[in-house]
Length: 338
Image (cartoon, rainbow, N blue to C red; front, side):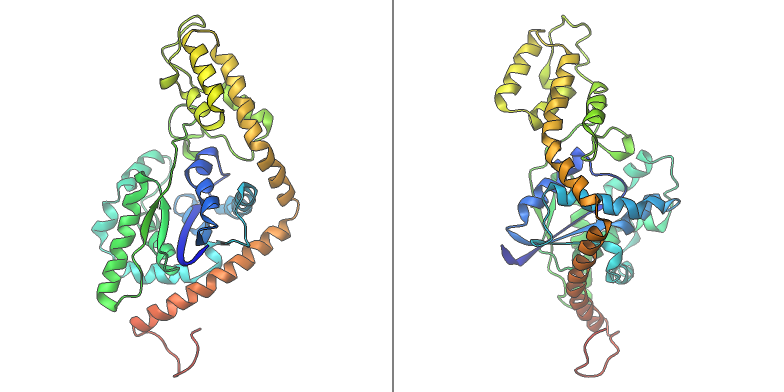
């Protein structure tokens, strides 16, 4: 492990982790543990930006998410795993960065209008939603992260954080390193309806789904729109279902299914059962480990508490530097920061 380079990433606790989250983030987090000093957090405050009207599920979702992460391979002995709200320095740095962030920078964030449209059933005309990139920046800079794992479609978010960090450094000195994008392979995982897999669309397969639930969801998957009848030749390259074979099936099975699909030797119904079996084989060990973890809520809370205490140590170091740079530290010479 390269203990000099810090990696930071987090995930909002708005629901169960699904296959899109796993292949888009969690799988890479697991692989990075042995190469960097990794800080991974459950972003419960970020969940409030969209779920503020009814936050009753956020705490439960956070523990469910922790179980998903641990069952997927995150190791609290190799990574610092914590929850955002247990490190209040996130809020303090967010406040201080908001003082220097131009409003126009926030309004031009590409996903701002997209999410308002996507979540049209919620009132997102709040400061919290507009300002979430500032909180996101605070999350990154608080740990003086050198790298943030992102997909290419997320690079614009990190660039805003870099701009805010540069602006702070230009005023107050070089406190924050400029975080770099750690581009990692992030295969696109379609939802059941062919759109991007997303909790907002209700088209997900979750790591926590039972075998029966996975099979039922696979039966609902959109398939080749050009294949109307069972006897029609299929087009696996444009079929939503075949995208799952690329993720879960061995190369020889992919070739077999593709060939049989093109010759109309396998129908969509049979193929849906086949891919359900492949997904369930993949999820079986994760489910078993997850159920074991959820048997002891206290153990999960201990992991969060210990991880948050470790995170708070680095956060306190950062905020001591920030307060000194802003001339708002109130302590005697030689006295430790509080």
